[in-house]
Length: 53
Image (tube, rainbow, N blue to C red; front, side):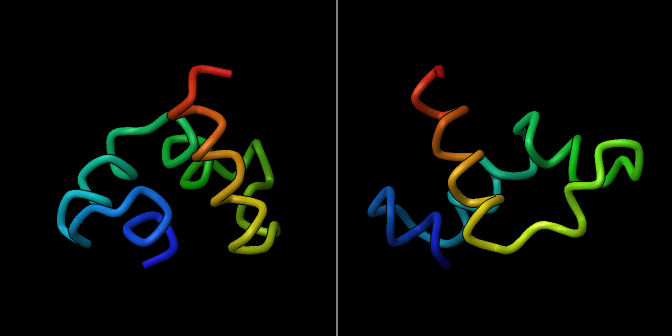
C-alpha cells in the first residue's frame, strides 16, 4: 500500500515492481537481515532503488 500510494499507482503494479526489485531479493535472503527492518525502512530502500540511488 505504501508503494502504491507513494508512486500513485495501482496496488497490483506496486506489487509487481516490488517483487522484481533488488530490495525484495534481499528481503527474502536471510543473509541481509532485511526481515528485521521496519516497513518504513524497506519502503525507503525500495524508493531509493526506484530513483536509481
